[in-house]
Image 1 (tube, helix red, strand yellow):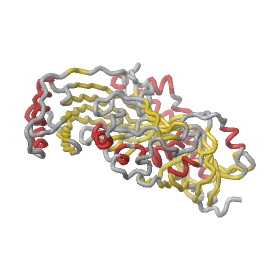
Image 2 (tube, one colour):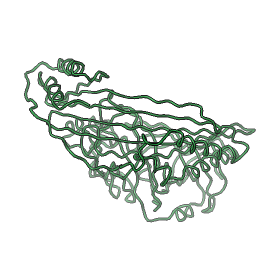
Image 3 (cartoon, helix red, strand yellow):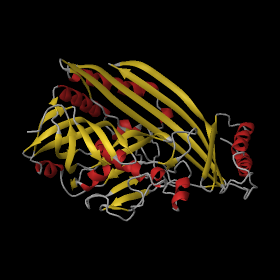
Length: 465
């Protein structure tokens, strides 16, 4: 996007008043979104995200600014304005830039920009119609498609140049069922980093659409969930959102370095059941949250956060690494050039155990099976969470019984980790968007089926019996 010669000039302008590190982050990102409702195209939007962010570090101080003007004049002006935050003499300079190569974890066999929109719309219409026809109670069948091809270029005052192109695509299915007692929705949102082959050769979008429709109809006819403390089986896939929200954020250096995480200064300590091994892995081929390099240029890597219940690692970016006296784990991420990077998750999951899902369910005499989770909230300082179940059932005598709706799981990440008594062998990942101080980024969450010995369940169906 800019020449190496200009990059050197901008970096030196940032270093002129005593900064010890300068970074230029350039981004070009064409975006496409399509919405189909009840078999008809409702909306098509395309746009281009284009600009640069410049960051200056001096010890533990950070200054950041962004601009859509990536001309020589615009970049030098921004670098000089940021440098005015410091008032010392230059302590280093950049003479040359060396390009660093990186592994590609998401080669696209069918490039998104080569696939006509009509082909994408055709599949969306078919999925929408399948949901509409599944049951008369489904009155609205929406399908959303989004794609981006983010091209990233990074230069820094260590004299390095990095590039990455991240093609991402996702389809979200949202059927709305209406009955005498109100309305319910289903929700499935598969996505990947790669090409259109994800929806033609890898993932069965039509089957996913039918699962979303089934979920909406089944929940519509369900009774209210009882409340109280009880054993809870949490399903695989998006069930991992509890670990992501209640534990994952608390393992990011963004909070750990400041000592405001419940897991600060606990490395090497037992923080979970010995059955729990948790991983953040940005190197999974074509996964939704994968990155070849992070947004600071560090290679992506597989970070084992918890091993057999022992806290072994945090997710660390450059600046917070300075605060902690630790090196980056390839975890510096941001939504786009207008955000300063910080430590964030990629593909975060609880690893497989040895039990089968059937063994786990059969071990529960009376409890809740939270097959799928929806939205929720969490306090990252304490790990306390509140999550709604999008699909749930009562377990009676070791068997999945009647469906229930309105179930909410309430607790803390610290407690839930210690109370996991069985871990399944059916690991599955699901896709989502994670919001934090550096914006909204694509991530995978995941886990096998797990049993938590006791969680407080909120509901309006009285006492479980």
